[in-house]
Image 1 (cartoon, rainbow, N blue to C red):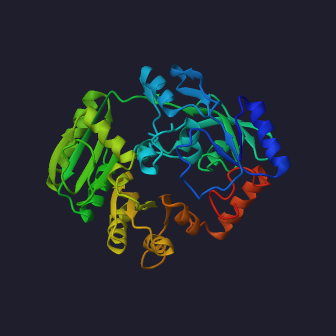
Image 2: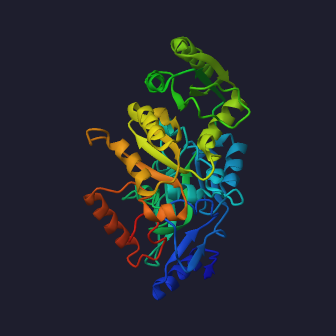
Image 3: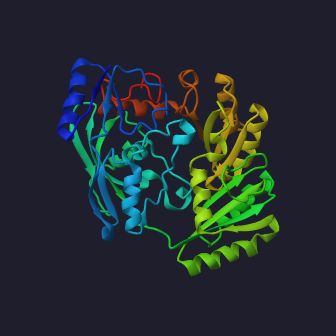
Length: 406
C-alpha cells in the first residue's frame, strides 16, 4: 500500500493523475476521524490531505473564513472564538462514538460529510454555510466553485454538491465558510418527567413559538447523559441564545408557558454548553458497547413513536434531537433484520412515511452487508450515478463508500 502526501494543489492534481493513469483507487482522508463512516474501503493507496492545512484568509468583519481543507477543526474554532464568532452549524464531534479519539477532525471533513449539530433547526446544515472551495476531481483536474463573500453568484452551487459526497467526487484542497457572531448568552430549559408521547408536542410547541429556540432534544427514561449534570428521566431540553436580556426573557417565557409539562430546571451558560456538546457527540449512546448506532431523520411529529418502536423491536436505546426530527438509536447488530426493522418503521404501517436512516457506527461486516445510507429511489440513484461519472468516471476517489458499485 502506498501513501500520497501532496503539499499543494498541483501535487494533489499529480497524485490523482497518477492513480487515474494506473486506474488504482484512492482512499481520501485528512484527519481520519471519519474513516468509520460509510461502507468500508478496500483501496491500495491513501491520498493523505493532512499537509493542506492552515487558515489562509479570515475576515471577521466580513463573516468569512478560508482554510486548507485539512485544517483541524479545533484550530478553526480557536481562531473564531478569539474573534467572538463560531461555526453556526455546530459541527458535531463523533470521535468517541467512532473510536477515533487519537485523531483530529478537520474542517474539510465536516463539510464533505455535511455534519451538523443541534442548531441545524435554526441555522441550517453545514452545506448552507459552505461558500466555496478549490479541489481536484477524479478526472485529475483542478477546479473551483463559489467565492469568498457571503453574497455570491457564480453559476452552479457546487459547494452543496460536495457537502455530503464523502470525498467520492473530488479531493478538497481549500474551503471557504460563512461564520457568525457567538451568542452573548445561552440558557437551556429542562422539563423532566415527560413521556415520549408528550415530548414531541412540547418541542413542536416551543419551536413554533416566537422564542427562537435553537436546540430541542429529548432523553427518554432509561437513556442518560454521561455528564456531571443534574438530569432526571424523561427530559426535554430547549435552548435559547442571544443577547443576555433577550435570553432571560425567552427562558422565562418558556418556563411560564410550559410549566405544566414537567419538573422544571435551567442550565446556565457552562452547563448548557456542556449539555449540547454531549448531544452533538451522541454521548447518551456512545458508551453502549458494540451496539450499532443509527441516525434516523423523519418528520418531527413521528420521532418519538419511531424511537419507541425501534427500542421495543430491537431492544435498543434512543433519544431525539432537532425537535424530534432526528432519532438516534443504538441496537444490537442484527444484519438485514435490524436494518429492515428501522427502515420499515420509517415507512410506517401504510408504507407512505418518509425519512432516511444512516448506519453511523457498525462493524465492518455490518457496513458491508446492509445499505449504510438510505437506498435512493431509482430516478435519484440514476442521477447520482451520472454525477459520479461526470466528476470521477474511473471511480478513483473513495470508491463504493456510499453505495456498492458507486
